Length: 254
Image 1 (spheres, rainbow, N blue to C red):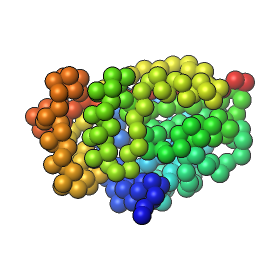
Image 2 (cartoon, rainbow, N blue to C red):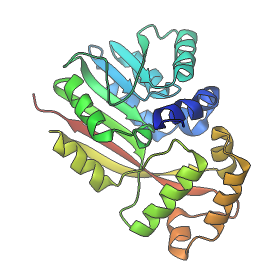
Image 3 (spheres, rainbow, N blue to C red):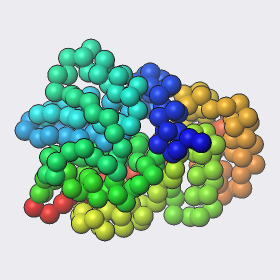
């Protein structure tokens, strides 16, 4: 029986190239905000945790001293290495491993960043503790991820469709849950914002190669959702919808 970590590798190893070319992952105002945040930080070392196809790494690399692109999936890291070479980003290096078992010394990084990855992490509290450990005093953590609404009805439907679409999905957390987990590890939240991501249904399931039986279940679930769910997610006739995304910048004490 495949473990959760094995499921993540299985799911994403075969679709690494699709994530490199994905419009949702390669573009967006969040990446523009990240580029602006790192402008003029030429002396900092950054860890991109759960880097996927490397879009955040590629965004910050021109502005910083070094970026470690870190992921569980070797195929994703192959894509990152090839694309970094193509872009002549020589300060991007890759390392493989789990988010909750970081193979780095304490106080190694000025920034730890993660984008659209944390909802796959099985050991999230331990991962946050590891992030805290590898950050230098006064270092910062930047989180970008899809998140769950506080309303239980909306939350339940989101978790259901995410798991049907991608068997490696674990949980989207609410803003309140993120705040509590970060504060428990000694982080102070410096900034937080929410936004909406337009999710095209066909591209969403094709990118993950969702099995046809699950695609049919997804269509049924979305089409037959309660009015409150349809209104909140603005579910269209073809199943496309809007999803919540959270942007948090948190800092540790100096």
